[in-house]
Image (cartoon, rainbow, N blue to C red; front, side):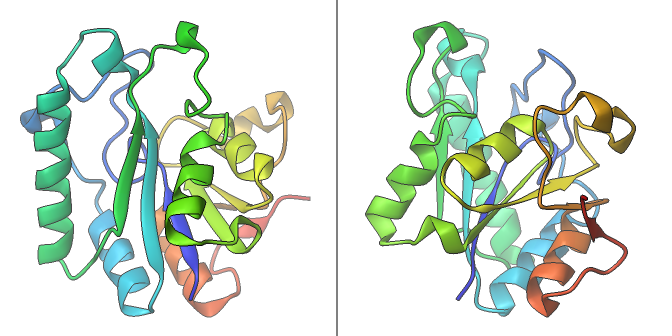
Length: 189
């Protein structure tokens, strides 16, 4: 069974923009092929987790109650589409707090590994930023960078590190994860 970690904003739902947050149910919009991708991974027997920074709570931009409502609706919609997220982990701390769970620090992944007895060296982390790639590499997981959120392939020369694989979106990454070979995606050299 493959273990897949997903970032949220820019992977599952539309990236709200730099320094912006999804602050309400109305502003949470699934990316076009995300629910289908999660359903495919679920049907293939993958165990899927969400690991996401949500500092807007710590900054007081939106409440924990609002975040919980957005999460509940997201999970409900994913299940209705045939997918299943095992558990969602958020870091709601502000960057200045310096906590161990705020990506690129690996606290969220390590907490999941401890709780579910997961070998992180066999896991994959799908994200839309180099911060997600750094998080994966910090625990020895494979990193998959997708380009439907914040990061762009054209910015490659500025990356601090290289992802193991890149794909246009979560569905392309999911097809790779199920088949074990790229489908219009490729490893970064």
